[in-house]
Image (cartoon, rainbow, N blue to C red; front, top):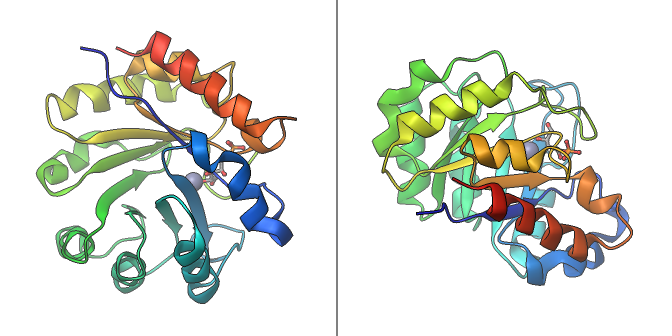
Amino acid sequence: MALEVRITPSILNADRTNLSHEISRIADVSDLIHLDIMDNKFVPNFTFDFDAASEIIASCPIPIDAHLMVANVDPIAVAYAEAGAASVTVHVEAVADVYQTVRGIRKAGARAGLALKPGTLIEEYEEYLDEIDMFLIMTVEPGFGGQAFIEEMLTKIKRTRKVIGSRPVWLQVDGGISLETIERAAHAGADTFVAGSAVFRSEDPAAMVALLREKAEAASQ
Ligand code: DX5
Ligand code: ZN
């Protein structure tokens, strides 16, 4: 059976001075909005503090997928779930107590995700599979949009798909996803696709989301 494909556009490179308009351009065709939270510590870039992010979460017409690229993430992760994010993803490289934090996220009513930087091996995190709702395999080094997809990550996506087996755990990919790369990622076993610059640098972002979905569905396992 083919995997269910989800497209989760990132607003990192959208016009941040007019976010509600930017979100309204793609809300009808997107599954969730991917919100990149960067603290200038875990990654060398800053996006939104908790208050600004909470406002986006509260006003967004579709569910928010919060990707937390922040150091000492444990307490703030649960706060994001309490603020209404539908999905909260923490980096394994930044979390002190994985079990406690993913359980806290779920207890607050959100889906819990674990993200891995390109150099982090999936095998060490298999033990958490029954406690989470999503693995996020970074296909670029986190911190910036517009980078090239790291082709070597295809092997890691395949391994992660194998490790997930029949569990209802989503496999998200983030970084360099475009019309040119999405089929390879889908074929390797990803089912949930972040796309930032591919969507917001296109003339018709909604049409781009639809095209990305079409390509992913055609290539999906
Ligand atoms: C990068 C972020 C991504 C970013 C992707 O660290 O996590 O979500 O917005 O941007 P593109 O799709 O341009 O690679
Ligand atoms: Zn992201």
